[in-house]
Length: 305
Image (cartoon, rainbow, N blue to C red):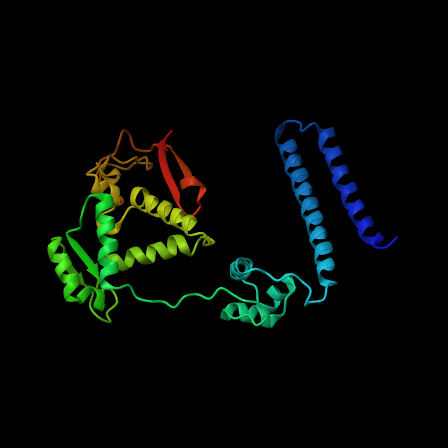
C-alpha cells in the first residue's frame, strides 16, 4: 500500500517501546542501587522512544505540508511569526535553518526580522514617542495615590519633560526635590543604573519574554519581590532592601554558623564579622529553592545539622 514504509517504521518503534515496558514490569522495579540504575535506564529508553515517535510524527506532518503549493499553504499569523523569531533567537538558529524548519523562504524570515512582509499584512510597531510632561506627572501622581506615599527625591535624566517649568512646579507643589544625571556621563546615577542593569541581566535576559503584557508584568513583579527580599546589596552593606525599608534585623548581623573546627570569634571571615553561634566546626545543610519555580530567582538557605 501507499506509504507502507512509514507505517512499518512506526510499528517497529511501537514494538520496541512495548518490549521495554514488558522488561520494566518483569523487573518489578526491585530494590537497591542496581535496580535504581535499571529504572533510570528504562525511563531513559522510554523517553528516547517517545522522542523518536514525536520526531516521526512531525516528519509526516511536515511532508504533507511540503506537498502543498507554497501559495496554498496557510500563512503564519503575526503572533506566530513573532514566536518563530523568538525560537530562532533562543536556539541560535540561522535564517536558513529557521526557514527550513518552518517551511518558508529565507527571504520571508528576513522580511519578518525587518517587520515587512510582502505577501501578507503585518502588525507594525508604533513609532517610539517620548511621554509629555503632563503624562509623566499624571502617571506619578497615580502611583503616589495608589501607594499613599511620595518620594523625597526624584532622579531622572535631563530630558525636556523633567526640566520644563511645569514639571518643576509640580515637583515643588508635592515637595519633591529633583536630581539629575550628568549629561553624557555613564555612572552619574550609578545606583539607578545598577538597578536597571540588574533587571536586564537577572530577568529579561534569562527568560523567554512573554507576549502578554500581564504575564510580563507578573514576571517583573516576581523578580523585584525576589530582589527586595532575598538579594543582599553591596550598597546596603550586605542587607536586603526589605531589611532596610522595614527596619528588620539584618540576617548578616546575626551570629554566624562556623564550619571551620579551629575558627574563633576573631578569625577572619566575610564582612561584617560576627561572633560564632554555638560551637565552631558545625555541619550544615544548604537548601536551594526557587521563587515560584523560576530558576533565575534562587533562594538559598543554610541550616545547622
